[in-house]
Image 1 (cartoon, rainbow, N blue to C red):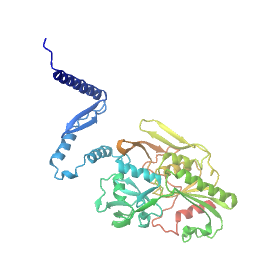
Image 2: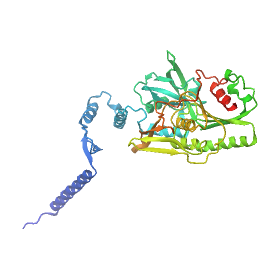
Image 3: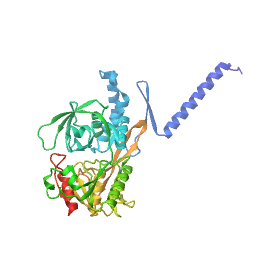
Image 4: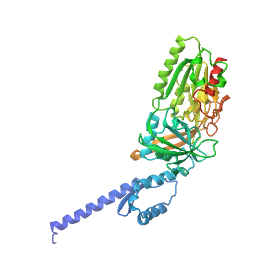
Length: 426
């Protein structure tokens, strides 16, 4: 039998090895349920739909290919942005403004926001009636100085209509480097015509807690309030704690402020009580709301969470509070949202203190943040919150015991604070 040349044998061996290798790859891809396709000479790998879902993606890829073939400005096509846009569209189809896909940049900005430092104008945004609205401007920020108020509708950003925008989209458009300007077209609540505001962006440093202890006759915030005429000359002392958000540094900032209040109570026997200000607090971490509520409540439920699977989870007082006995009045308004509403609802339902101000925003749904590949993230609404008495917060808000509306903010005529002090003096 005639022997084959070595070069021929080597060729056969290489072909056989290649067949074994490709067969192994195909088997592994099949085991991991991954589809492989070639589009325009590029390898596309995507996981197949879940077993209980029947989805035909042929239309998706048909449109994809048509864009690459026919779109006039080929240089502007970014395949990664197209994928992110497709995911955002899928998520927004649920009709829930709080379930949102965040590409890497937006996901990073969200984390910076809760961390207490970012560059922008300092306005917390929300969604109501399919409009981008301001939940609250943060105190001392460019947004507040420019005259932005809670419940303002942001009609345009730099001449772009906001119709159809998600909250992350709006945040991305409004934020920008310190020293740059953004033009907002704003419609104030109950106004007929929008106004244009040119706002200079800045680095926003957001302290979680503001506090003071003062004699009533030195409180400048009520110096010209007609509601305080009968007591604004009093030399009684009250303490004041304002919580601006439930973020990364809230617990530490809060503990320091509470220590100051306790020191004042220990040295001043005339301390009449505490005003706890949750106005324009847009919320934040659920765990933070339980921590803060536990400062005032000795036991019981702080909030109940009804989950998407029908289960119910109760969050109860989880520590020994230091302000369990001090007389308490809580200030809320339509800019109080989310975790702020949890705390206000718990204090109200446990009859620990009185609520003064306006009905709160009504953001009572639970978003679970999840990290995705490449720095992206997704926030999925997984439940809704109920107060200890079983009242739903979502879209209802928390109604105060004493309703005091403030149409135009006046730094020396805070009618809500005046009412709170009046209650502490009774």
